[in-house]
Amino acid sequence: MLGYLVKATENLESGQSFSSARAAAVFYHHTELLAQVWFQELKVPYPAGEGKVREPETLDDYYG
Image 1: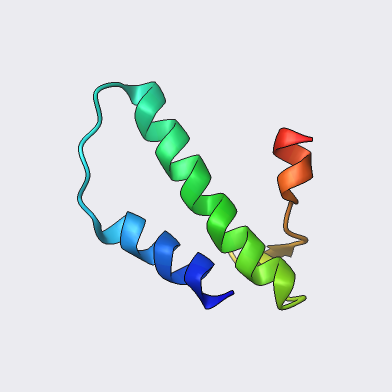
Image 2: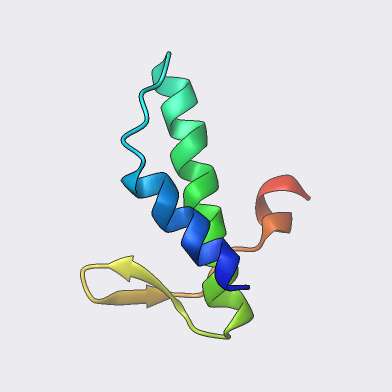
């Protein structure tokens, strides 16, 4: 399970370049999903920024 968070962190630190804005959006959306899965599996609310907390979305919300 820790692999989800490690991969999300690696993605953010990779300094990757993208061929288009869409490619960047897909990459970072996938990265956020990895982090959300980690929070969900720990049953911890996913942080939404500015001190707000929300329940993590599931993979089914996006792909189901």
